[in-house]
Length: 323
Image (spheres, rainbow, N blue to C red):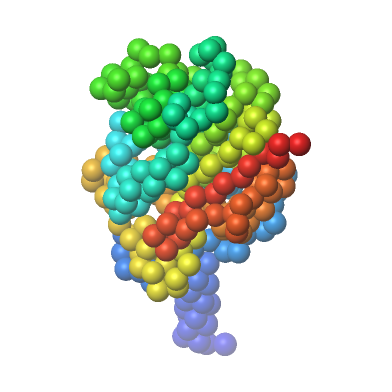
Protein backbone atom coordinates (compact mmCIF):
# COMPACT_ATOMS: atom_id res chain seq x y z
CA UNK A 1 0.00 0.00 0.00
CA UNK A 2 1.34 3.46 -0.89
CA UNK A 3 2.05 6.14 1.75
CA UNK A 4 -0.72 8.31 0.28
CA UNK A 5 -3.23 5.45 0.49
CA UNK A 6 -2.22 4.73 4.10
CA UNK A 7 -2.73 8.36 5.08
CA UNK A 8 -6.13 8.39 3.40
CA UNK A 9 -7.19 5.24 5.29
CA UNK A 10 -5.98 6.72 8.62
CA UNK A 11 -7.95 9.95 8.03
CA UNK A 12 -11.15 7.95 7.37
CA UNK A 13 -10.65 5.93 10.57
CA UNK A 14 -10.05 9.06 12.69
CA UNK A 15 -13.09 10.80 11.20
CA UNK A 16 -15.21 7.74 11.94
CA UNK A 17 -14.03 7.74 15.57
CA UNK A 18 -14.91 11.41 16.01
CA UNK A 19 -18.40 10.92 14.55
CA UNK A 20 -19.04 7.97 16.86
CA UNK A 21 -17.94 10.00 19.93
CA UNK A 22 -20.14 12.94 18.95
CA UNK A 23 -23.11 10.64 18.46
CA UNK A 24 -22.65 9.23 21.96
CA UNK A 25 -22.39 12.62 23.73
CA UNK A 26 -25.77 14.23 24.63
CA UNK A 27 -26.35 17.85 23.79
CA UNK A 28 -26.39 19.87 27.05
CA UNK A 29 -28.25 23.06 26.16
CA UNK A 30 -31.23 23.96 28.37
CA UNK A 31 -31.68 27.54 27.23
CA UNK A 32 -31.80 27.00 23.49
CA UNK A 33 -34.61 25.99 21.18
CA UNK A 34 -37.27 23.45 22.06
CA UNK A 35 -35.89 20.59 19.94
CA UNK A 36 -32.80 20.66 22.14
CA UNK A 37 -34.90 20.84 25.29
CA UNK A 38 -36.83 17.82 24.09
CA UNK A 39 -33.69 15.74 24.27
CA UNK A 40 -33.80 16.12 28.06
CA UNK A 41 -37.14 14.42 28.46
CA UNK A 42 -36.15 11.37 30.50
CA UNK A 43 -36.36 7.87 29.05
CA UNK A 44 -39.22 5.67 30.22
CA UNK A 45 -38.56 4.98 33.87
CA UNK A 46 -38.00 1.50 35.15
CA UNK A 47 -40.48 0.09 37.68
CA UNK A 48 -38.10 1.02 40.50
CA UNK A 49 -34.65 2.44 40.99
CA UNK A 50 -31.72 0.09 41.50
CA UNK A 51 -31.36 -1.01 45.13
CA UNK A 52 -29.79 1.70 47.25
CA UNK A 53 -30.22 4.40 44.61
CA UNK A 54 -32.83 6.98 43.73
CA UNK A 55 -33.18 9.93 41.39
CA UNK A 56 -32.12 13.51 41.98
CA UNK A 57 -33.72 15.14 38.98
CA UNK A 58 -32.37 13.15 36.02
CA UNK A 59 -29.31 12.06 37.99
CA UNK A 60 -29.17 8.69 39.76
CA UNK A 61 -27.67 9.03 43.24
CA UNK A 62 -27.27 6.95 46.37
CA UNK A 63 -30.36 7.21 48.58
CA UNK A 64 -28.21 8.51 51.42
CA UNK A 65 -27.12 11.43 49.21
CA UNK A 66 -30.51 12.61 48.00
CA UNK A 67 -31.63 14.18 51.27
CA UNK A 68 -28.39 16.16 51.44
CA UNK A 69 -28.61 17.31 47.83
CA UNK A 70 -32.28 18.30 48.09
CA UNK A 71 -31.47 20.13 51.32
CA UNK A 72 -28.84 22.17 49.53
CA UNK A 73 -31.34 23.12 46.81
CA UNK A 74 -33.95 24.39 49.26
CA UNK A 75 -31.42 26.14 51.46
CA UNK A 76 -30.41 27.97 48.30
CA UNK A 77 -33.93 28.95 47.23
CA UNK A 78 -35.52 29.56 50.68
CA UNK A 79 -35.36 33.33 50.43
CA UNK A 80 -36.68 33.32 46.86
CA UNK A 81 -39.33 30.64 47.37
CA UNK A 82 -42.21 32.68 45.95
CA UNK A 83 -40.10 33.63 42.94
CA UNK A 84 -39.26 29.96 42.44
CA UNK A 85 -42.91 28.91 42.44
CA UNK A 86 -43.85 31.85 40.22
CA UNK A 87 -41.33 30.59 37.67
CA UNK A 88 -42.34 26.95 38.00
CA UNK A 89 -46.08 27.62 37.64
CA UNK A 90 -46.08 30.71 35.39
CA UNK A 91 -47.34 32.62 38.45
CA UNK A 92 -50.48 30.55 38.96
CA UNK A 93 -49.35 28.72 42.11
CA UNK A 94 -51.00 31.35 44.33
CA UNK A 95 -54.40 30.64 42.77
CA UNK A 96 -53.82 26.89 43.07
CA UNK A 97 -52.99 27.22 46.77
CA UNK A 98 -56.08 29.35 47.40
CA UNK A 99 -58.22 26.73 45.65
CA UNK A 100 -56.51 23.89 47.53
CA UNK A 101 -57.30 25.46 50.91
CA UNK A 102 -60.82 26.58 49.96
CA UNK A 103 -61.63 23.08 48.74
CA UNK A 104 -60.43 21.50 52.02
CA UNK A 105 -62.45 24.06 54.02
CA UNK A 106 -60.34 23.82 57.20
CA UNK A 107 -61.85 24.58 60.58
CA UNK A 108 -64.95 23.71 62.54
CA UNK A 109 -67.67 26.32 62.47
CA UNK A 110 -69.12 26.58 66.01
CA UNK A 111 -72.48 27.59 64.56
CA UNK A 112 -72.86 24.46 62.46
CA UNK A 113 -70.62 21.85 64.13
CA UNK A 114 -71.97 19.39 66.71
CA UNK A 115 -71.66 20.49 70.33
CA UNK A 116 -68.20 19.84 71.77
CA UNK A 117 -66.49 19.43 75.08
CA UNK A 118 -65.34 22.62 76.76
CA UNK A 119 -61.76 21.34 76.50
CA UNK A 120 -59.99 23.58 73.98
CA UNK A 121 -57.82 20.65 72.87
CA UNK A 122 -60.96 19.03 71.45
CA UNK A 123 -62.01 22.12 69.52
CA UNK A 124 -60.96 22.98 66.00
CA UNK A 125 -58.80 20.88 63.72
CA UNK A 126 -55.19 19.86 64.15
CA UNK A 127 -53.57 20.26 60.73
CA UNK A 128 -50.12 18.93 59.88
CA UNK A 129 -48.55 20.77 56.96
CA UNK A 130 -45.56 18.81 55.66
CA UNK A 131 -42.71 20.43 53.70
CA UNK A 132 -44.45 23.72 54.37
CA UNK A 133 -41.56 25.57 55.95
CA UNK A 134 -42.29 29.01 54.51
CA UNK A 135 -45.86 28.95 55.85
CA UNK A 136 -47.60 29.47 52.52
CA UNK A 137 -50.25 26.84 53.18
CA UNK A 138 -50.37 27.19 56.98
CA UNK A 139 -51.24 30.89 56.90
CA UNK A 140 -53.97 30.26 54.34
CA UNK A 141 -55.39 27.42 56.46
CA UNK A 142 -55.55 29.55 59.59
CA UNK A 143 -57.02 32.53 57.72
CA UNK A 144 -59.74 30.33 56.22
CA UNK A 145 -60.59 28.66 59.53
CA UNK A 146 -60.78 32.03 61.27
CA UNK A 147 -62.61 34.14 58.71
CA UNK A 148 -64.79 31.58 56.90
CA UNK A 149 -65.56 29.11 59.68
CA UNK A 150 -65.26 31.47 62.67
CA UNK A 151 -62.92 28.92 64.22
CA UNK A 152 -60.37 30.37 66.63
CA UNK A 153 -59.06 26.96 67.74
CA UNK A 154 -57.87 25.20 64.58
CA UNK A 155 -54.09 24.98 64.69
CA UNK A 156 -51.35 24.07 62.22
CA UNK A 157 -48.06 22.32 62.85
CA UNK A 158 -45.65 23.14 60.04
CA UNK A 159 -43.06 20.41 59.58
CA UNK A 160 -40.09 20.75 57.25
CA UNK A 161 -36.77 18.94 57.05
CA UNK A 162 -34.96 22.12 56.01
CA UNK A 163 -34.09 24.63 58.77
CA UNK A 164 -33.60 27.47 56.28
CA UNK A 165 -37.14 27.05 54.97
CA UNK A 166 -38.46 27.02 58.54
CA UNK A 167 -36.57 30.20 59.37
CA UNK A 168 -38.12 31.86 56.34
CA UNK A 169 -41.57 30.78 57.55
CA UNK A 170 -40.96 32.12 61.06
CA UNK A 171 -39.90 35.46 59.59
CA UNK A 172 -43.04 35.62 57.45
CA UNK A 173 -45.23 34.64 60.39
CA UNK A 174 -44.31 37.89 62.15
CA UNK A 175 -46.55 39.74 59.68
CA UNK A 176 -49.54 37.50 60.53
CA UNK A 177 -51.82 37.32 63.60
CA UNK A 178 -50.38 33.88 64.39
CA UNK A 179 -46.74 34.76 65.13
CA UNK A 180 -46.96 34.21 68.89
CA UNK A 181 -50.12 32.15 68.90
CA UNK A 182 -50.42 28.50 70.03
CA UNK A 183 -52.28 27.96 66.77
CA UNK A 184 -49.04 27.91 64.75
CA UNK A 185 -45.97 25.79 65.43
CA UNK A 186 -42.85 25.11 63.34
CA UNK A 187 -40.92 21.86 63.76
CA UNK A 188 -37.95 20.38 61.93
CA UNK A 189 -38.91 16.86 60.90
CA UNK A 190 -38.49 14.22 58.20
CA UNK A 191 -41.84 13.34 56.60
CA UNK A 192 -40.77 9.71 56.29
CA UNK A 193 -40.40 9.32 60.07
CA UNK A 194 -42.64 11.59 62.16
CA UNK A 195 -41.74 10.19 65.58
CA UNK A 196 -42.93 13.31 67.40
CA UNK A 197 -46.49 12.97 66.04
CA UNK A 198 -48.71 10.42 67.88
CA UNK A 199 -50.83 7.87 66.04
CA UNK A 200 -54.32 9.00 65.01
CA UNK A 201 -53.84 12.58 66.22
CA UNK A 202 -54.18 14.68 63.04
CA UNK A 203 -57.41 15.80 61.31
CA UNK A 204 -55.84 17.00 58.06
CA UNK A 205 -52.42 16.25 56.55
CA UNK A 206 -51.32 18.58 53.76
CA UNK A 207 -48.25 18.67 51.54
CA UNK A 208 -47.92 21.25 48.75
CA UNK A 209 -45.12 21.12 46.17
CA UNK A 210 -42.95 19.05 48.47
CA UNK A 211 -43.57 15.35 48.11
CA UNK A 212 -41.80 15.02 44.76
CA UNK A 213 -38.55 15.78 46.60
CA UNK A 214 -38.92 12.95 49.13
CA UNK A 215 -36.59 9.99 48.83
CA UNK A 216 -39.27 7.44 49.79
CA UNK A 217 -42.66 8.85 48.87
CA UNK A 218 -44.42 5.62 49.83
CA UNK A 219 -42.94 5.77 53.35
CA UNK A 220 -44.15 9.36 53.75
CA UNK A 221 -47.67 8.41 52.66
CA UNK A 222 -47.70 5.53 55.16
CA UNK A 223 -46.65 7.95 57.90
CA UNK A 224 -49.50 10.23 56.87
CA UNK A 225 -51.88 7.29 57.26
CA UNK A 226 -50.48 6.51 60.72
CA UNK A 227 -50.78 10.02 62.16
CA UNK A 228 -54.25 10.77 60.75
CA UNK A 229 -57.36 10.11 62.78
CA UNK A 230 -59.93 7.70 61.31
CA UNK A 231 -61.83 9.86 58.82
CA UNK A 232 -58.83 12.20 58.53
CA UNK A 233 -57.79 13.50 55.12
CA UNK A 234 -54.48 13.30 53.24
CA UNK A 235 -54.29 16.16 50.71
CA UNK A 236 -51.43 16.77 48.30
CA UNK A 237 -50.92 19.60 45.81
CA UNK A 238 -48.09 18.84 43.40
CA UNK A 239 -46.83 19.50 39.90
CA UNK A 240 -48.07 16.72 37.64
CA UNK A 241 -48.45 15.58 34.03
CA UNK A 242 -49.98 17.89 31.44
CA UNK A 243 -52.81 16.09 29.65
CA UNK A 244 -52.68 17.88 26.27
CA UNK A 245 -49.76 17.10 23.97
CA UNK A 246 -49.50 20.57 22.42
CA UNK A 247 -49.78 22.33 25.77
CA UNK A 248 -47.26 19.85 27.19
CA UNK A 249 -44.77 20.69 24.45
CA UNK A 250 -45.12 24.43 25.15
CA UNK A 251 -44.83 23.88 28.91
CA UNK A 252 -41.70 21.72 28.54
CA UNK A 253 -40.12 24.33 26.32
CA UNK A 254 -40.74 26.91 29.02
CA UNK A 255 -39.60 24.62 31.84
CA UNK A 256 -36.35 23.37 30.36
CA UNK A 257 -35.50 26.37 28.20
CA UNK A 258 -36.39 29.34 30.37
CA UNK A 259 -36.67 28.43 34.04
CA UNK A 260 -33.01 27.47 34.70
CA UNK A 261 -31.85 30.54 32.78
CA UNK A 262 -34.20 32.85 34.70
CA UNK A 263 -33.14 31.16 37.94
CA UNK A 264 -29.57 32.05 37.09
CA UNK A 265 -30.46 35.67 36.32
CA UNK A 266 -32.94 36.25 39.17
CA UNK A 267 -31.47 34.12 41.95
CA UNK A 268 -27.94 33.48 40.72
CA UNK A 269 -28.64 29.75 40.94
CA UNK A 270 -29.12 27.83 37.72
CA UNK A 271 -28.43 24.36 39.11
CA UNK A 272 -31.19 24.43 41.74
CA UNK A 273 -33.79 25.48 39.19
CA UNK A 274 -32.53 22.87 36.77
CA UNK A 275 -33.09 20.21 39.44
CA UNK A 276 -36.58 21.52 40.18
CA UNK A 277 -37.81 21.22 36.60
CA UNK A 278 -36.25 17.77 36.32
CA UNK A 279 -37.93 16.69 39.57
CA UNK A 280 -41.32 17.49 38.02
CA UNK A 281 -40.55 15.22 35.06
CA UNK A 282 -39.59 12.38 37.40
CA UNK A 283 -42.71 12.61 39.57
CA UNK A 284 -45.28 9.83 39.04
CA UNK A 285 -48.30 10.41 36.82
CA UNK A 286 -51.69 11.18 38.34
CA UNK A 287 -52.74 7.53 38.08
CA UNK A 288 -49.49 6.19 39.53
CA UNK A 289 -49.58 8.57 42.47
CA UNK A 290 -53.24 7.81 43.16
CA UNK A 291 -52.35 4.12 43.30
CA UNK A 292 -49.57 4.85 45.80
CA UNK A 293 -52.12 6.57 48.05
CA UNK A 294 -54.49 3.62 47.79
CA UNK A 295 -51.71 1.14 48.54
CA UNK A 296 -51.02 2.97 51.82
CA UNK A 297 -54.58 2.14 52.92
CA UNK A 298 -56.46 5.31 52.04
CA UNK A 299 -59.89 5.43 50.45
CA UNK A 300 -59.72 7.58 47.33
CA UNK A 301 -62.74 9.70 46.38
CA UNK A 302 -63.76 9.69 42.73
CA UNK A 303 -60.88 9.26 40.31
CA UNK A 304 -58.50 10.31 43.09
CA UNK A 305 -57.25 13.65 41.81
CA UNK A 306 -58.24 17.01 40.37
CA UNK A 307 -56.16 18.45 37.53
CA UNK A 308 -55.30 22.15 37.66
CA UNK A 309 -54.46 24.20 34.55
CA UNK A 310 -54.49 21.22 32.24
CA UNK A 311 -52.50 18.99 34.58
CA UNK A 312 -49.55 21.29 35.27
CA UNK A 313 -50.51 20.57 38.86
CA UNK A 314 -52.97 18.22 40.54
CA UNK A 315 -54.67 17.82 43.91
CA UNK A 316 -54.72 14.29 45.32
CA UNK A 317 -56.80 13.19 48.30
CA UNK A 318 -57.17 10.11 50.45
CA UNK A 319 -59.37 9.44 53.47
CA UNK A 320 -58.32 7.16 56.31
CA UNK A 321 -61.08 4.57 56.84
CA UNK A 322 -63.13 4.95 60.02
CA UNK A 323 -63.01 1.22 60.76
